[in-house]
Length: 122
Image 1 (tube, rainbow, N blue to C red):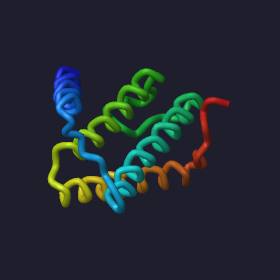
Image 2 (image 1 turned 180 degrees about the horizontal axis):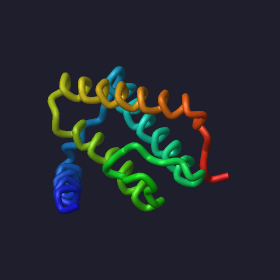
Image 3 (image 1 turned 90 degrees about the vertical axis):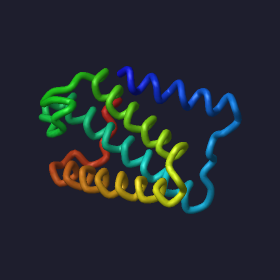
Image 4 (image 1 turned 30 degrees about the vertical axis):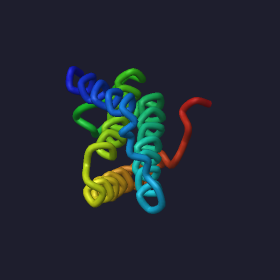
């Protein structure tokens, strides 16, 4: 948690100095894709938690709370954006492709268990 706070403070400092990296073109698409796949995985995880399915992510545990799910995926999304701010352009895109690949595999695996893209808030 202390590391996350440190990252947030560094980001806020960069924003205050006007040093925010604004992605464009393909880079923007990759960042949006990475963040979107994380959000879909979070929705699937929440749906599974509310329907007594077990979670395979060892960080979250077998039956995570809503707070744990939101905290975990929120932190993952902030870290993804932070990578965009600090990595060189080529590495930003590589990181996004890796995140999209891992999350797409996870989303597909969840879908094969009939989770699909269900929204848990209904």
